[in-house]
Every structure is written in C-alpha cells, then in structure tokens.
Image: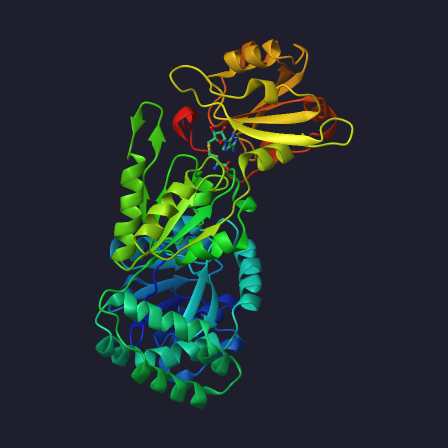
Length: 478
Ligand code: SAH
C-alpha cells in the first residue's frame, strides 16, 4: 500500500493553498466544504475564487514564503511553476506538515482521492497517483451504485447510535440489530423519502427487540472456486464481505482471499503434505467455537465445498452443536480447469459421461475401481493425483485403456500461473515430471483431451491481474 487512506477533520483548521488558478480554486472549495479556514497565496486570482464563500478565505497577494506556513494544518500547492511547488513541498515537509502538490505525486506527502459524497458517508477512491482518470471513472461507477439516500440513512443511524448501544450490551446483538435496519423496511423507507416513518419504525424496533443472552453466530461454508476471483458466485462474494472471521486453507488463492472484508480476522488452517496445520477435528471445533462467540464465520474452501472438500464433515459437527450454517457451492476444479484449458468434459463424439475421483494415495497406493474407470466413452478427472500419476496411468492401461489414450495435467488452472501439459497415458508421467509442475494440479484422461489444441482460448500471460494460486502440496488437500 503506497498511501494509507485516512479521513482528516479540518473543521476550523487553517490551511494554505499556493496558486491562484482554476485548480487552486477547486481545492480551496474542497477545503471550505470540509470546514477549513483557507489562506490563498498567489500574485493574482482567477474569477472562480470570487464565487467561493468569502467568510473563511483569506487572500494573500504575492508569492509563497515560508512564514506563511505558521499555524497551518495542511498545505496544497497548485502553482503552475514547478519550482514554486517544489519549494512549498520541501518547506512543508521540513515542518512535518501534510502537503499535496497537484498532479505531482513525488512531491506529495498526501494525495487527494476521488470522492463520492453521501455525507456522512464518504467513499474515497485513489489510484495512488498512478492514474487519476481511472480513479475518477471508478468513482463514476460507484456513484451509480450507492443511492444518494445512504447519507440520510447514515444520519438516522447516527441519531440512534447511543440508544442502541445502551439497549444491547453484546456487540453482536448490536450488529444484528443494525443489519436488520439496513437490510429491511426501515432502509427502504429512507430510500423512499419517508424519513419520519423510518425514524418511528426504528424507535419501535428498539423497544421490541430483546437482547439474546448468548448471541449465536453462524457459519458460511463457501466454495471459493478454482482460484480466479472472477469465478466466485455473487452469494459467495456477499458473504465474504460480511463475515467477521475467515477460516481458510492453501487452496484459497491470495486473489480470492483479497475479496474478503478487509478487517475480517483471518485464520489459516492449511494443510501441507507432511504437516497438518490443524487436524480436521480441530477445524470443526474451531468453527463451532467461533460461531458460539457470536461471530459470522466464513469457512472458505477451494472449489466446491462438497467435492473432495470435507464440507460434509464440517457441517455435520455444526449441526450437532446447533450452529446455524449455509453452504454456497463453488466452481469445482474439474469444471473451472477444464473450461480454462479448453477441454470439454463431455462431447457427443468423445464422452457421454464424466467421473471425478481422488488420486490421493493411501498407504502408497490408490484405492479405486479400475474396471469402472477404464470403461470407454467417459472422461476421468483426477483430483490430488500428481504424486500417484505414474501408478494411475499404469493401472488404467492395465485395466483396458489403450496407452495412447489422451491425457492432460493442468497446473493452477484458471489463474495466471495455469500450465497445461498434454500427452497420452504412456507419456504423461514423464512429461509432467519434466515440466516440474506446481500444485494444485488436476489430471484429465479421455479422448476429449485431444480437443485442447483446437479449443484452447485462455492465455494466462494475458491475464494481467495478479491471480496467484498459493503453492501447495496437493496430496493432503483432501
Ligand atoms: N473442493 C475442491 C477440491 C479439493 S481437493 C474443488 O471442488 O475443486 C484439492 C485438489 O483439487 C487439488 O489437489 C487439485 O487436484 C484440485 N484443484 C483445485 N484447484 C485447482 C486448480 N486451480 N488447478 C488444478 N487443480 C486444482
């Protein structure tokens, strides 16, 4: 993070603006909006200055001099002369005064974001000075998303804040109360302009709601998909944005984790091949304990929680303890990876069925129904199969698939690190070893793999966003 976003209270504070041009006038207007007293220093001023409320603006005709910084809280330089701006910046920094030089990030100790003003709600968007135009475009999009009535809703909430605090001692009860207000009819009344009715309803709700002794939280078992955040569901995203704590493991990529609410607590329970960070029993108990503390717990899993994800075991424990939960499906690796590798899992000319199996080794071997797998006209998708790949290919050939059956192994599918290695049952183990693939990897066997060369469309190098799959040793992911 290049800059830390903060909101500064300038009410009654003295600020200096250096420059008399249009931009200086706009910055002066902004400072006045925030309640500051502004001194503007410039040899002359554009007419826009005369349109500003004059009570809190003082004009100093002439050039900048260091003594003007006396008693100032903040400085903005918008002078056309770069040298003047540099001098202002240095002088302000020497006094530890926050200084902004318009369009010159290198001389700034703070930058001004694009603002969406729904006072008292304020949304600030910044590109860290890299692209103000992009930040402004983003602001325009956000403007359309945030109803202007949010400001009034927030003011109403402010009026009741202390009363609600007195009424509910547990912070989670307060949270539940406010969620009901913001997501229910009271918010709708404000949006419809019925502020008085909303106020009455809030008053009534405050007397009706009772405080639960031990507020119970809930658990969202959410499938985070195969790694690319574009593949999250809307519901997953919504719950990720409202959780208090997220419990995640290695399959969840940093790019997906980035979508979780910033201030949510993060608990990593990843499992590496030889080191179980937390045994499964421990994870189940952890979820129960967090929910019983009244928290909204996001159990974020890679892919789909019900496909080789132990999601069933986790919610069984929750059900036993009476913890409310909901399950959000995710795009499972087979589906996401196959799409991004251009390998249709079924195809009228190639495969009428598709089967998902785990290649996880138990005591060094794979416990699979080989006869069933080696049937013709079906696609086999193998999760957690990298370490058992040689044995897998050998067994499939032994049970009737021809050695030249097409097969693929895909590393970190759907992400910018995706790599697809194709071959046959005979050649894939050596090709995969040569390629030194990084987990997670998925194996696809069947004649549909031959379509890859014609149908591949995704170029990971073109996906400029930093979609990074966390490296993991896949065997123990299950
Ligand atoms: N619940 C998950 C699977 C968990 S098992 C799901 O539905 O996808 C972990 C295995 O999933 C890994 O060993 C690997 O075989 C596969 N996998 C998950 N994400 C993957 C990805 N982006 N690329 C390739 N394989 C992946």
